[in-house]
Length: 416
Ligand code: EPU
Image (cartoon, rainbow, N blue to C red):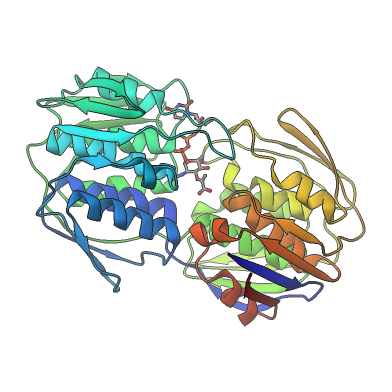
């Protein structure tokens, strides 16, 4: 298992190219199951989760290569199953459920278990499929879903769910009649998926609003698609500029996807200039403490809560951070405290009292975004931080140590 070593305390300076978004690429890859043939994807990030999705599609009979652009060929899908071995390493595997039932009439998908950040059930995905006429059963830890042809339905999500919206939107493209998704997710990754589905021939309206309407069609055709930039990766590097009092220019990103994060970082005293596809971020000497509550898009993303907490650990006063999406997404708190942070937890609220400095320590990554928060803290801390279990980081940040080293960080990957 690899570890990261970081010698902190150096301001970062230079350009960071932002990679394609993991959470946009995964549903696009799953969508390739909806139309037999060769789908061509550009800007797919090189990440462990992407390889897992590739293995999952391969298990079903799809072939794909590792080149840019990446071609996924779904001519010969013969197995309609997502096995436990793959689902347990990546919950997003559940994204194949909708496409399989819609196109292949059946799916056998392992039920994801618990997760480091919360219970994360998929009841809303299953309820929606049942409303569309699928017969859904649970057997031996697997969801078995069958339908001759799905039928359009009016579906109301009790809670905003990103992959739930994506799964049912994909399923509805091949259903008979009209499906309306109420209280749908508005994340840019959902919109990017809808755009590709429309390019394949789907009829979808209301994307970007909380009511999405899909008129089912008989078949879809494979096309080409470029993955949108990763807004969470970009936002993480924005914090890296602020926490090291440095100056970073992020290229190949979409400032319009970074609204809530930009607003909070401006309030925290960072200097930010956005134009076209670049965002320039500078530290301003002092980090101001500001509070934040996570919400679905366009609110402040839960995927940035941990990284923002690292910044607030060095704030000039007290910051109150409320996690409203996942019930258990505070695994980074104990690790940050080992580095000298002053954080009190009560339920879903963290009270972060800014301290003058953090000090390097051995810490352990527990999930993807928690790991990113430890890297950020390590970049700012005095001395050496040693982060173990960084396979979490490799799930979602392309070449993170290379990108950071290129802008002046002292960071190394070492094999244990
Ligand atoms: N929920 C239910 N029932 C469901 C579905 C969701 O109760 O059937 C609850 C969840 O337990 C959670 C809330 O609804 O409390 C929102 O969860 P959501 O379904 O939106 O999360 P997700 O689709 O499983 C995606 C991202 C996550 C990101 C969340 C929230 C992908 C592949 N994953 O997960 O990304 O945190 O949306 O924005 O898109 C990450 O990249 O590190 C990551 C965890």
